[in-house]
View 1 (cartoon, helix red, strand yellow):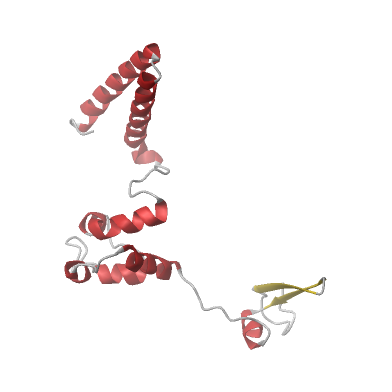
View 2 (view 1 turned 180 degrees about the horizontal axis):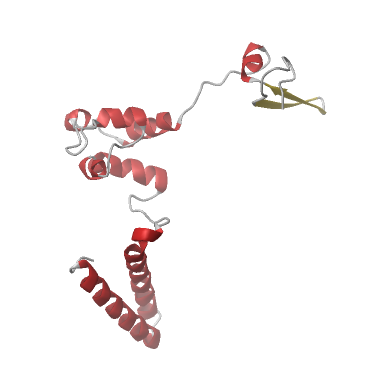
Length: 173
């Protein structure tokens, strides 16, 4: 859709106004929208700014000087670079900046543990670990409800799955 003002550029700003029960719609390009006096100009917003703001907000006490000067041993990314970009340099950054990232991840996602989708290629082990955690929760609940047959069934499933995980992962659980 072309801009209704200049009729040259693509309309990217769509405004609906309702004044005295009369509705008017405008479809403008960004340039024409900026030229109008009747729009409130909202400063640009980026996800990186949001993450940086949350990082600063998440520290109730002043951030340790070490974090500001710290560099990831693997990729060399500085913590201050992460705060500006909103992205880490490598997987080791999660470990290296873990202390600073923990509160931010909990605030954004509600947890610092990944609980979302798992890639198919490497996911079977993780899916079995998630299943194990679910069964352990179910087992605890079954015992609380005195559903001992279900508890015994879950116990056996848990034992078998733990053995399978131990044999493939060298005892890591």
